[in-house]
Length: 450
Image (cartoon, rainbow, N blue to C red; front, side, top):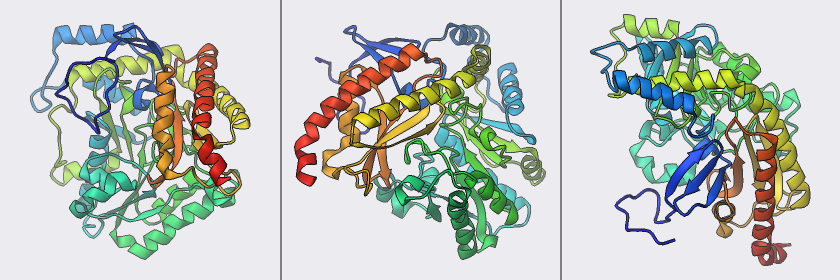
């Protein structure tokens, strides 16, 4: 791979081939090699690449205007997207604040929650409880409620530490996720933390309904989500759902909240919300919060590109495509079939210790021993190595480390919601080849620790 020098820099020095084009679930580099996008980028491209209806909607908007500052004009595109979004959210969540990405959405939610408390004369409330591990964004505010050591530790002196409760990793703790008592066990840790911190100091609880990158597509145990909502209500704490990864149909419902009939106070979305066509996200807030804050002088927050008409036009078209093609239902059906295929691979490969997920947000976790749940040795960097092997074999997947980012390697498989059985067969075949190659590569290490 001969490439010209680059002036770009991101996390490291690794180079990748130059992208030429993308269509549907496939992407091609300039040398003609085809890749199957098995993770929708970073769980973003929910409706697939280069959807012509979305591109045409963007062309139409570009012919009218590409920017209209929110303090100067209202735009048809932003009003239409706000109305569509509110209609898809639980009752009362009908006020929308647009942003350009997930971290911005989370920051906005934190500041909205704080201003709501101040407007109510509850200035002592400032703590937002989250889970460990978790990931809510890369800005300093979002990192303060994130628990993923490699990303948070370097910046700890610059942040206000926020309280954490354990994520409900029942499979690691030897508990039955289908037992409601398990869900209550983890939820009760939230109540204990609220009491420990002092309820009068706690502003909110933020949670991904289905865990994302930090816990690897982790569904909640039975009864967990309903119970944490009850606890938030009991102590007057705002219930904030981070649907940046789970929203826009990914889990088999437009919002993962719908699986448990939840009624949060704030929802944040991005990623699949505009499916990678433009940078776009949203904070959706219950009207009672918004009216209280506006009555108290206004929301002291904003972004230059909030409500950008081109971005919003793309967002409208993405939602239209999700509904027109029935992609939420397809995510539910294909997700079940993908889990079956991953479980089949688990039977063949002993290093797969767990398979989990909901809809088309799925993952498998590597373990040295299923019985003890011992992770693969850290120095193998299995999460990184496997992704590179799969990439070389033409499959794009996503990875992180499950155990606070330090160890415990998981691979997320989350193809676009347009995926078919044929695509799933292709994904499974490439995973099989990659797993065989990876297993052979680390076999000496496995034999040593056996």
